[in-house]
Image (cartoon, rainbow, N blue to C red; front, side, top):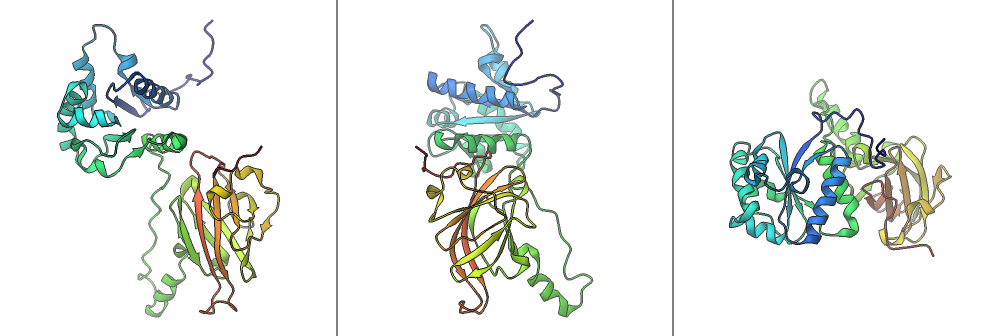
Amino acid sequence: MAEESWLMNVQGVDEQAAPKVFVSYSWDSEQHQTWVLQLAHRLRADGVDAVLDQWDTRLGSDLALFMESAANLEYRVLAIVTESYVAKSDIPQGGVGYERRVITPTLMNDLLGHRVVPVLRSGASLPIFMGANATKYIDFRDDDVYEESYVELLRDLHGMPVLEKPPLGFNPFIGSAAEDVDAAVRESRARYVSPAVTGEFEFDYENNDGRYLLGAGETEFVVRFGTAGHGSIHAYTDGTNLKSLALVRQASGPEGVGDASAYDGSSRVRTPQTGDAIVLRNAHDYWAAVFIDEVLTRHTSPSGCANLKARYVIQGARSRYFGPITSE
């Protein structure tokens, strides 16, 4: 009996339902070919039907026919972009140039589509033929954040973006008295949302029950704050989607956090001060860090309103590591 693969369980896999990609790349070096092979192998292990010349062709194979697979509309094209790839594509030259000639007509017939997925491995530009697609790519140039880039790619191929399109709400001008519309818009909970995976936010933490929403979809964090005093604030797990909440003293950025799981997350409330951070773990086991920049109470604020200013970072790939701090 053949030894069962420890990489994956292929029983019951629906190959017809799996997203299909044709991997287009240039043979820059043996090291680059190995990098592409490893990426394609991992994609297949994660449910993506990747077509790659290194295992889909043999001696004597019709390479032109193989490259014409790139024109098959069932497949998206995963373009591994390097300086050499750009040069060969723009001339065009070699197999990459041939693939470009094959792909371009299908792109012209599907200008609003997303058939080509640019993966920038090196260099600073994309091939001309990618046109509108050139404004968005997945950056694999930094090996230190490979996992985050890989998860971004995998989510795109499976149609599971980190930032999901929010549901459409009701028109506040319909069914409301004119004098109620301004109040409805002003008090909308949509004011207390920052859907990006990194950024900054500022709000009156006495409004909206102190709740603020960071991220979206699986990376959503509902954080709840309450009055503690000038320069400090209570953060709660009550009424949120948090599994844990921990305090990191004197951490003004990700480099001051290190491994988020190293901090005590056993309490339902923590009280960070200005210059501190809190690390959060949500129901989907993603991690976030919130850096407290300013806390004003209604008594110390010039406006007479409580105010919190903070920055945040949500880690991809469910990574709990934020910065260079390491334990000895």
